[in-house]
Image (cartoon, rainbow, N blue to C red):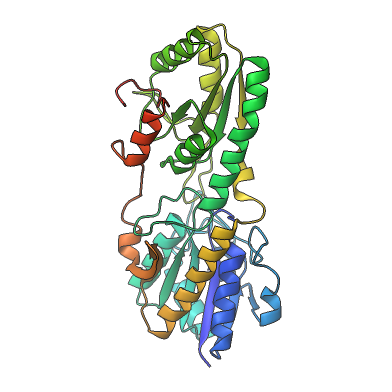
Length: 364
């Protein structure tokens, strides 16, 4: 009997359980055995696993998070967790990875995760081991695929937040600032600002200028618009400035924890105008709860496609969606660069055409 290993890595995300369900159901129907490693690569290294049967995945398609658990600090090639390593003395556990493959006689490992997880998957593939990736990230910044699951849910939640702050902003004639996730790519902020009718959107791809933000807000007031909505991605930064880092987690695959740029914007607005500014940081709200119908659909199709690739022995691949087609791409291409908002894209043009500002007078 062929055996598939499965794990979810990185941050939690709406749709993870739908992928687990799809992989399990597709594999079990074909007579394969499936085991799930707990807490991402931490469970893989520690050989902490569970047999996945049909009843194990029953009723989980609409459930947020991951029933297998996850970790965004367990990297088998730079392992910092005891007893195998520490943040000060990380270990390369390549041999342990191979040992676990051989112990379970795995015919494939399916890794569900974002850029960090798929980078690890690619390294495992370079070791000559069979691995297939499934793309997950709410930032929608993984290359080689039009969409990653989890993004649509985050987009919907952010849009609803922008919708909801309109009433309080208008009631008090305030500047309301909504901070979304988006470390290096501004897809959530840009699209939720467009969909929610934001006035200013600040994204990592376009550095803002404080004077241009102030000028735009004053112009709105002069035109009788007494409130404004600013949507800002956590990775937005001022021209010539740095990212706003809340803390550093040295043993993480991406040690910088961003957050707080919206408070810098609010402080700048109040010091340079007579306007009141208030901040709403969405944070992990965007990653929690029930996935949207689109994310459930996408996750299910991704999971099914991953099992198809396994049957065809197409290892070292990641499933992807292009247009209406589900395809495979090389893992090395998927992790080679991030997909970011382009300054001259149709979406940016549309935002400018309806009067939205990017906090930079050079745009539009």
